[in-house]
Length: 113
Image 1: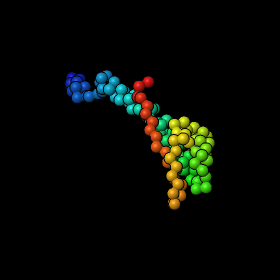
Image 2 (image 1 turned 180 degrees about the horizontal axis):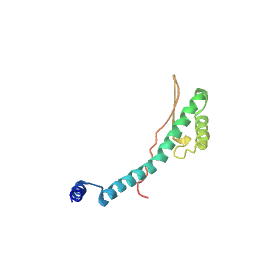
Image 3 (image 1 turned 90 degrees about the vertical axis):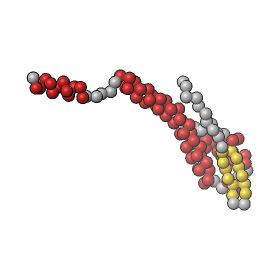
Image 4 (image 1 turned 135 degrees about the horizontal axis):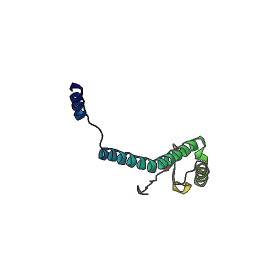
């Protein structure tokens, strides 16, 4: 008798996850996974563009023409699978301190499938 009443009190004090709570957590996990799957390719491509521009620092850009710089970028970008930025998008500034190569771009992807 005492054992049975202790089990009843123990069962009343237990709290657990409800089906609705689990559905909400599951929807949140799916939403975060969807955002990560959409953002990751753009981030990888950004890192590839950055890597290509950094590798171009090894060349003597001061002696190269703008066309040669753009062609060099295009060759490196094609081997790094960069598709968003081309040599035509580069901003090349030649000054007394040297040649500066920049690119400014934006990637916009819808979240829906």
